Length: 235
Image (cartoon, rainbow, N blue to C red; front, top):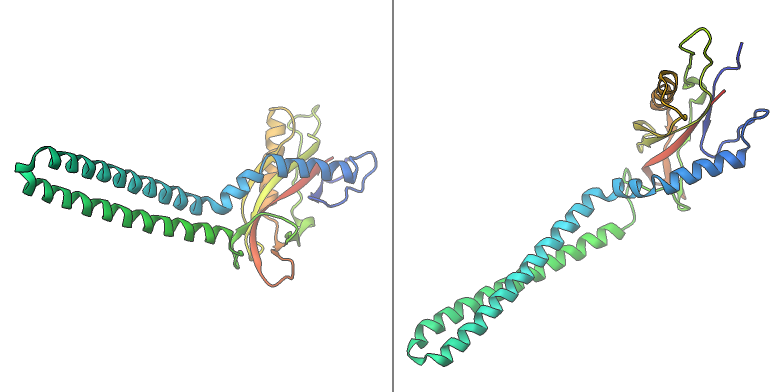
């Protein structure tokens, strides 16, 4: 009989003979989480805010363009007024209208700038309870509570085939309550055979059954939502 599968958490030691060393697995998971998913985590944490910033930037640019167009129109009206004194009354009215349009555009531009600055300040503000954050030195990562109960069960599909072996890394979204909200395959086993696909899917499903102590601020006073990697060593 083969040895049961062992579930590992990122940064947890792999204590098994002839298995990858702790340093090797930690380096592998660190590289994956930092190089493949850092941007995704950052975008997930600030996606809504970034959309608001983009919308504010577009509105500001449009207001600026309107102000420049209104100013050009006012300048043209001034030139026409000098060239045609007989139409002075009409041109003056048009000039006044253009001036008011320019002032309104400048006011809108100032408003959009203020909103943009407020959004930037919100982006730089200290995260609150339940906010989605990235793991850093200021964040204590979530800690699994039921590792032994979430071991994926892998079987060979045929009598003469062997079970897939290797390391599978699953990225899980952990709520501020320690619940797994989502799980995505970050690194699967090499190959595309039915056994490999089944093993990868079993690891994803097992990751969804994990329960964690949630990630917190360094002092433990605030709980956060985080994306965090979970490693499965299939033997």
